[in-house]
Length: 248
Ligand code: 13P
Image 1 (cartoon, rainbow, N blue to C red):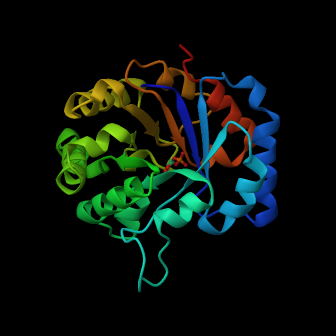
Image 2: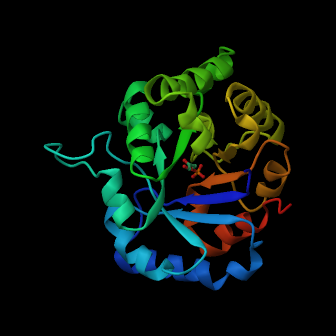
């Protein structure tokens, strides 16, 4: 079922003290956020325990920023989805553009992570999105479709039924250059039409979402919420974005 979701991707930021304080400030301001809106925060792996302790028993869910494609074994440096579940994570971001484009992770590798996350009982927040070059070449839909099909090939068509999709155009991430609501809506509708059960899948927009542009994005018919980077590091900004979700 579609429900408004706003997830904060804290990326490589914070100290143990600062993430505890950020999580607490979000809890303190939650009354401004509609009860139907699912709020999620995704700290770095090493901060999960601290943030989990603050969020325990509240309506804010915990997510991880990545997960291994493997369950266990000799994979130095990796963190398995089952380990994340043990820390109370309900979500894990998979295929973020920084993993794909900064660290060179392929569609197939992202799809393997997706399957591992689902196998551990977590909900993948599966990121798709085109580069500026793709967009200028008119390849936006083709790139997004290829990224979705990679998961279907690895995990079967049913896998995406259980996921949250995040459309994050690479050119809009951390650049201050947001997709217009119409540009985002066009791709969100395309994703919904491409998915087998698109009508019931939550599709989030990510890329320079701020308090002053969130409401216009979230008002679009196929945008169910946001995946927020920079603005999720300030509790007031993040809460204002959470409060901008549609609440029907
Ligand atoms: P910004 O909101 O900083 O553009 O980051 C978006 C993002 O990458 C969320 O995953």
